[in-house]
Image 1 (cartoon, rainbow, N blue to C red):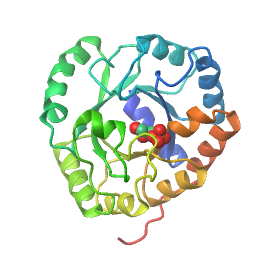
Image 2 (cartoon, rainbow, N blue to C red; image 1 turned 90 degrees about the horizontal axis):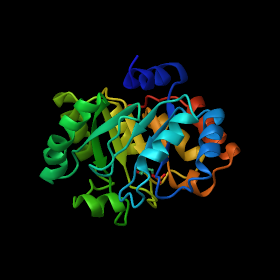
Image 3 (cartoon, rainbow, N blue to C red; image 1 turned 180 degrees about the vertical axis):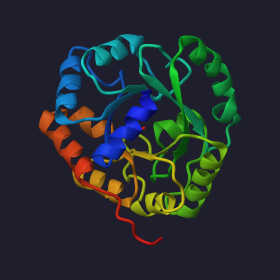
Image 4 (cartoon, rainbow, N blue to C red; image 1 turned 45 degrees about the vertical axis):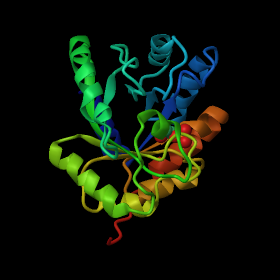
Amino acid sequence: MNTLERLLKIKEQRGAGYLVLIDPDKIQDDTLPLFVREATEAGVDGFLVGGSLMLTTEFEHSLQTIKNNTSVPVVIFPGSLFQVSPLADAILFLILISGRNPEHLIGNQVLAAPMIRKMGLEAISTGYMLIGSGKTTSAEFMSNTKPIPANKPDIALAHALAAETIGMKLLYLDSGSGADTPVSDQMIGAIAHHCALPMIIGGGIRTPEVARKKIEAGASFVVTGTVTEENNHKSVLKNFADAVHSASFVNRPS
Ligand code: 1GP
C-alpha cells in the first residue's frame, strides 16, 4: 500500500485524519524524538515535514529522526526545491493553484519531478490553495502570490473543481502558519459538497474544538503546526487527535 492509500485508509477507518506539521527550523533537535514518539502514541495519523524558509541544514537529519521514532506516514510538505529527500514516505507534490506565479504552477515542478523520480519517492499531486487570513503569511510572501479572499467560497470551489478535473489527488487549503483565522467552515463546506477530492485544512487551528468543526464542515485531514510547537504535551496532541477522530462530516445543503 502506498502512502496516499494509507492516508485514505485512515480517513475511511477513523472518519478523518490528524496531521502534525514539523518545521525543522522551529523544533529543537534534542526534543524531536520524544515529541514524535508521544505524538504517535497520542493518535497522530501522520507527520508533514517542511517549512517556508529552512534555515537549518539538517532537513534530512530531522526526517531520519522522525522516521526512526514513528510508524505513521512521514510526508514532505516542501517549502522549496531544497526539501526533497528519499528518506520520507512521500512528498506532497504541490501545485500552488490559488496563485498565478508560473514558478509555482509548473517551473519548480519541472525541476523537482526528475529528481523525485530518480529517488523513487512517492509524489502525491496536491492542489495547494492559500486562503487570506487578514495578514501576510510567510507562504504568501515567499511564493509571491495573492491568496484567495477568505469570504469567497465560490472562487475556492472553482479552483478545487479545476484541481479535480486536472486529476490532482488531494487539496490543501492553508491560511498560512500562525494565521489569525483558519479557513472558514463555509468555504470548506462549499468545496466538500461539490468536489470529491480529500481536503487537508491547515493554518491557524489552535483548539481541538476548531479542528472538530473543520472535519464537520467537510475536511478530511486537519493539520496543526504552531500550536503543537508551542505546547507539545502529549495530552494536547491527544485532545486534537480525539476531536478529529470523533467528528464526522455534517452534510448540510450548501
Ligand atoms: C501551515 O497549515 C500549516 O502551512 C500549519 O499552520 O502553524 O498555523 O498550525 P499552523
